[in-house]
Length: 480
Ligand code: HEM
Image (cartoon, rainbow, N blue to C red; front, side, top):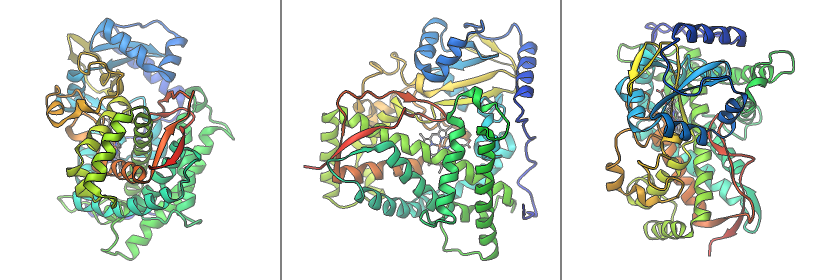
């Protein structure tokens, strides 16, 4: 594959991680042996039931351990001890106070590297910071505004295709829409182009499927295995993305505003620029981080609004008053619709799609009176932290009023972390994601109502991000 040499490289790439599961297990056991005697308290016997529960329904387990052991505890999952840190202070410690203690790359989510490569999520230290500095301008206000043209156009078409008095899986619907938006805004591809955009979307979904299957199946490597399918999907995606990069290198065009084009042109402070493979890894990471998250947020918002008619009525009153039936502008979404903001905040409290902040300790550290050894897997967990009753009373209840401006400002630092805790790893696409969620939810509710199906309960699936298990069928009706 062709790479363009930069005169000044961004920095030395981090060492590659082994994708061999046997090697990974052996490394984990060695790290635990080195750190023996200095793990925080918690259940450390081998337990298949516990491992299954963390994979299928982790909240009761994590909140129970928080009650028993406090804001830091360990537990054995599969073969290895894993440390969890919950609550405002813990979130702040990991993300803002002492991020230097942790790496993302060697975390339990290292499995993503074969698909994502060395994008922002999976790199650390100086290489991460320099790459992030080069990328930040692509997420400035005016660039995000340029992306909203694609969001609006795609949302209009997708909403027009919805028919009242039908049952629609709103999760599947939004996922397709978010993928089309990502294709256009991130990759600059036409999602209807059968040769490129449509294939890239299909293969990306196929690749993501790998991370939703059971852990044991992910370890199988033979022909026909999910792993091989992941590699095959990645090969097709790579061909498409590298061809797009080459096209932009060959004929630069200032008019292009998609993120891929901006990254091809981007320069760091010392004139350094990304190579082709660095751009490929960054856009693949943006696709991964950016489309599932907005999908889930819109879906969970529709679910909660269907169950809370008062909140829905208040939201629609605000919508009518501010927009008068017109499509919203970014300024209106961001500044003139405070109740919409409160609804989205509360949805992200209850269902933060990127629910776990996976890390690996790269040095020994102490927190909350406990020592943690270098090499330990450490996770902060927004999903559980957002349901601690001392911080969020009646945590299971959907109450947007918790997020009035005053009450939000009065929360302890680190209490509310749906986009990460702040610091240098906070979500780079926060604004992009917030606008996408607000825009689609608003435009949909201007036309339709989505009602819950009687007798159908929703359960949440958490890998790789939170989503309604089996989708979310809802009955649509025209807005009265
Ligand atoms: C509702 C939408 C979104 C939510 C809730 C969300 C949440 C998060 C969270 C919690 C993190 C930090 C994870 C950690 O500390 O380990 C994160 C990081 C990240 N997000 Fe988002 N995200 C959203 C949308 C997006 C979008 C639209 C993009 C890109 C277009 C994006 C790109 C990224 C990237 C690249 C990172 C890694 C940043 C770094 O480490 O420097 N996200 N996101």
